[in-house]
Image 1 (cartoon, one colour):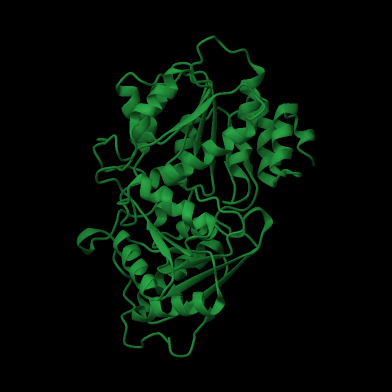
Image 2 (image 1 turned 45 degrees about the vertical axis):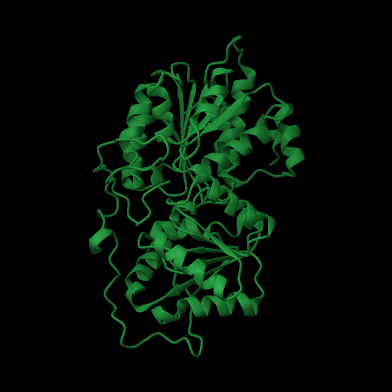
Length: 427
């Protein structure tokens, strides 16, 4: 199948060709036709399979085919959980609409709202947004969603993880009841399907791959190691392997900062991105990682979605996630667009329960290796590490009811007391 056969406009086909795309991915083949037909769509696809183009291309086609008014109201809203993902989607929208008369912009917290508001006042067709900043600007009368024709909810499962359910409900009330709705995500829990039932009208359900599976092109390996030797082992792997671009995941912001300090002492350039970093610092770190000036990017799960780095060869789980679905998103940063990749997990004794949960989710036994000199400590406790402040466990998985009061801060898209399941409290 070709992109031409999907029914996209010549202007879009020209932009696609310029990007070097030749054949649509499975999720694009399955999702684009029903979206073009104006149907609501519930789509599940692995991360890194072209999901974003699966909704942006047909949305742009529909908007370009319909007449515009002199002052452009927001006609399509793409809601997404994190700043990085919002920025990535916006870049895709700009690239795909290069030969169309379509205006777009992105809004998120952590930066001055005035330039964002000024762009919206000039009239835009497509708005990409995170929930907190969107509702802040709407409350100030700077954004109107009364003319939205197409609503896209991307990474819906992460939305619930981050406590955005109430905000999603608020946004829904600001849009016309009659509109086209699209929901895309890499994973779908029971709570997500319940949410979809309240948003979508007689949706077409498409699925490119089985839920919660990992890309075949990714070589996955577990290193069993003593907790105190993790940093040394990782430095050994990076140094001896002469790896030039490595994305490393920790569970906490504090852990990310500490690891960067250890890397610096070993002469390895790196930077951390997490919720306590300013948007400017996050953007600078990501830019340095992409252009090769930084060898290692250490991230909390804030970056598990939204990082689009072509041909990223290595992902390391310095600490494996306590939420197994997050493992799928983390390692999905490599092995993208058909390229091969390697995902390594450093697992200490107190993470064995998490490892079992991951293997159960992805329905495969991960290969395990032990490197001499870095053996796991037989005296280490196998009691699962507890997450959250004060050592308290987080809200159980698949709990969609937010505990927060919905208060927002225009500079951050975080949620007070939301039922997130990691220590990172901002997006």
